[in-house]
Length: 117
Image 1 (tube, rainbow, N blue to C red):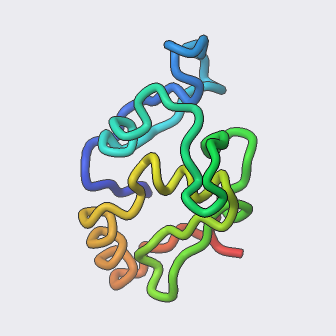
Image 2: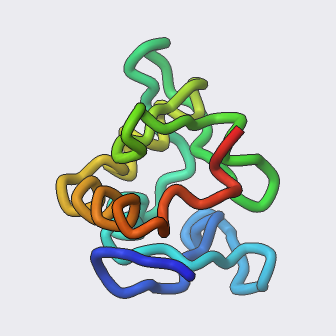
């Protein structure tokens, strides 16, 4: 089951403005907040490497290769340039998301198994 602080919307992984098509392999469910933050971005700024890099691509990359959880599973930590840029650009640690993760963890619904090492 998927949970979000806002409704899910269908998002173009490669935005239509950048040539992305409305085909299944280019579509993903995204909470509206993440979708709004991503907008037409395909790259983001990695604050550690101080460079622009590609954002995470969920159809071709594994979550656990670019991200980890903090000790209480409320904060997404970017472990690579791609991960850090994605956390930064999508604002993945917004207060509402942290609170949702806290509640879901307490009820045994978080973290998703595919995000664990």
